[in-house]
Amino acid sequence: MRRLLNTLYVTTQGAYLRKEGDTVVVSVEKEVRLRLPLLNLGGIVCFGNILASPFLLGACAEAGVAVSFLTENGRHLADVVGAPSGNVLLRREQYRRADALDSSTALARAFVAGKIANARHVLRRAARENATDPATVNTAADTLAHRLRALATAETVDAVRGLEGEAAAQYFAVFDHLIAQQREAFRFGDRNRRPPLDPLNALLSYLYTLLRFDAAGALAAHGLDPAVGYLHRDRPGREGLALDLMEEFRAPFADRLALSLVNRQQIRPEHFRTDEGGAVLLTDDGRKEVLTTWQKRKQEEIEHPFLGETIPIGLLLHAQALLLARHLRGDLDAYPPFEWR
Image 1: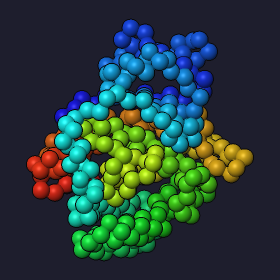
Image 2: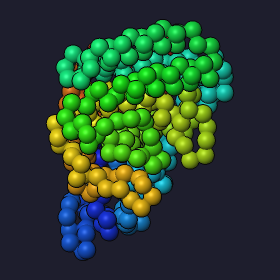
Image 3: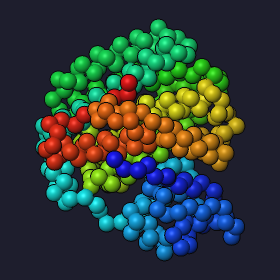
Image 4: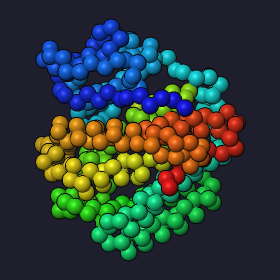
């Protein structure tokens, strides 16, 4: 299993990144703010007006450290990565299965099964602990169980997508009942994005951006192409397989973290602003609070249900990418999705 490396998130506008010896140096207005050994980094994510020296970008590509550039609000712009790793035969098999109906459907079914099972677990746990209407939340969890059973007989990717959409709608229909503190400020009506129109949706979108980056990095590290997926089909500029893989982790990782940040009042209304177009966005202080908590959460350990090993949460995506690669190579008869227990 890989060693858990740090991800450097740069959010201070006008920051400049350069290489100095074997370290990454972050400066703001010519004042050094941070030095980190390059060998301790698994990736660098730059939000907004961030500059990086060509020498640093070349060193990162050579070291296998992906550098991603996003808008200040989290929209993906570009990545700087080195040569693809892994066996070319693995990627050829990934592409062949993406073109085959049966194998595409089976993998899409597995990703969505993990997503629905984990969403159901989040609802069950909230109903026991702090939901404002436990009965309604439990009813939604029962409905997700029906969707999970129906998924077993879905014969096409479109049928899988239909069940996934229904399950997501039922899950988010009761999401407001999971807010135990600051209910007026973080009231949740429905899932909206591009742009998010309320603080909770803005928080979820930001966390999903972080999750997508980690999923793409895990897939690339295990020789897979993050762009060619099974549930999410090819589209220019979209990392379909990264979106597939992150489905299993939305509820137990991103959604639970969002709820925890709000219910513990680590994130408050003053951590958001509204731009001229009506989009609700995290402030600099809000992003820093989220990123700090995100990094701490990744250090926590959990027993992987399939591997039977205790690993940091930050390596779960790597474990799933490894299992997917083993399935595509023929070492596993089926891909086992991660199910939180």
